[in-house]
Length: 135
Image (cartoon, rainbow, N blue to C red):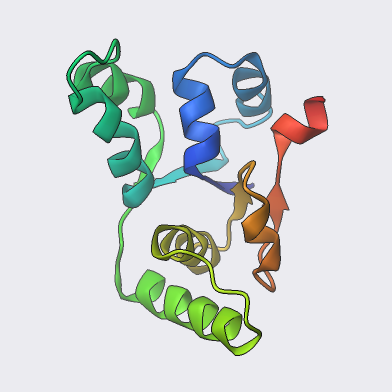
């Protein structure tokens, strides 16, 4: 039983129909958990509300509907604060949205699925990059 947490880089590629995303997600079954942090959902919805966007909010809602939402709760807040503190201590800060995403993955004991190399600086976080694995 695996738990993975999808970052915006993966979700964006998924919404754009990148083949590697569907292939990667097929590796997971009904006993596995696929999380999408609420901040990643927010990031996915923003382009849908921009004028001239080909993707609508309904498209995003439908595409992400099969994944479990991961809310920003007290466990995520604590994990994210610890990550930010650790990164600041070593002079390797990461932006707030990314820290919240990393905190979500850590709080849920999930591997983070991303193409963003900045997450590799987070101690104790397992990062999976199916996009790079495909290349």
